[in-house]
Length: 82
Image 1 (cartoon, one colour):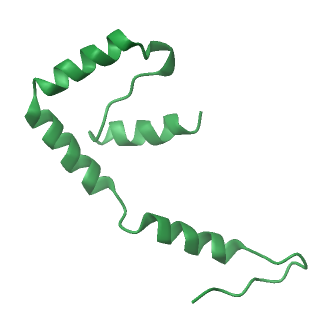
Image 2: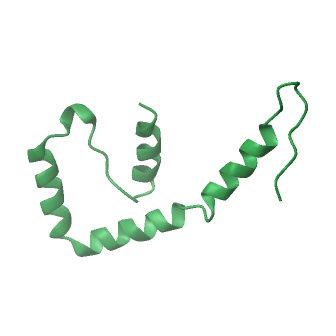
């Protein structure tokens, strides 16, 4: 259930909404979508909040972190790729 934390962070800054899995039904989703489609300004505000929360080149940052932690089988640091 690691995605709940990620979704909660995004919802907390106004960049999205959470529906807990036990409550996630077709009817609940339809109701949420109908409400959102009726309020385009709300969708625009959520999109702006999500974008402000984003980290540019997140995949590159994660890859650099992993490379920095990687060690070879003998325990020595692995060479960093250019």
